[in-house]
Length: 376
Image 1: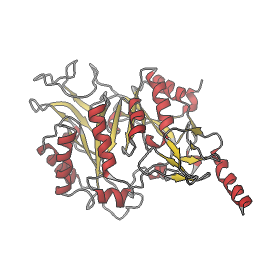
Image 2 (image 1 turned 90 degrees about the vertical axis):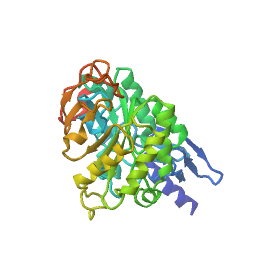
Image 3 (image 1 turned 135 degrees about the horizontal axis):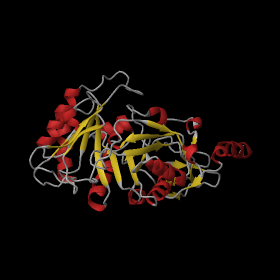
Image 4 (image 1 turned 180 degrees about the vertical axis):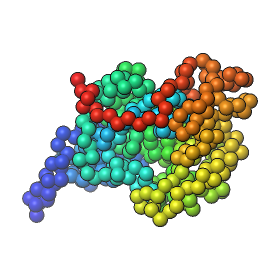
């Protein structure tokens, strides 16, 4: 029996060949190893994978990352698509992800990547130096870890971020914020900006629909606000009948105003039927407009709508004089009324964020990239 067991373990760990060592784990007295990257605390025996599928216990029981240096694809996007509206508006961002996720959202809009168990999706070999060089040569001001969550490929994301910073490229995390304190410090020390998905403002929603807990995400948001210089914005995808009631939106906005303040941008975006929620209708634009109004009534100054055509909900307005300082039509900038210091040209009110004297001109283009073209 023991020989059969060891053969089975050897077969399971064979696919971990070449996997990268990781940090943030410890051994348990029962022989298992606990991954300490996120609040799932997966406890693994040799050959087993965590729920994220990409962090696994090798034959020695050490947690390894099986997707280091491998990507599901690269694309140059407008930075507003992340969405980031106050971080180098109009500029191009090189986006990429790997596979897997540490949440189990029934509504996942990137399920073919985040839920992937097929390694042939990771077709692009992608070492950190090549990614940074590609971003520079493509004229991108930043690189986004997106499509799936950089939390689960922490070591890879940090190495890429360091390579990017060496070339003056800004690292950006697009994340659900479901991460433990120590790895949280490491990840965000390497980031210049982030967009955090606040899935809902209900513990029941997080537990039943996402397989997680709201409190851990709140802790990440408060950490970013109080203890880092990372520019961050927050997104809530509104799902009809699940997280879009007036009461829940009001509770979210009240907590947001108290703990994050009025100047952190909040995006309400439209759901479309996907993954395991094909029976739920798409979000009506009126729902986003209602949510935006609730947020503004709670004192939030920069509230946006997304995934719908809404020029007003996509634009930035000065809280001082009410004038439009950045106009947007989808991902195209239609107006720019900021001075060289990022202040409203009309009344001088400073707009929070990272702005350059002139906006970028990337527009709404989406340009797929073959990283092999940039190999040394």
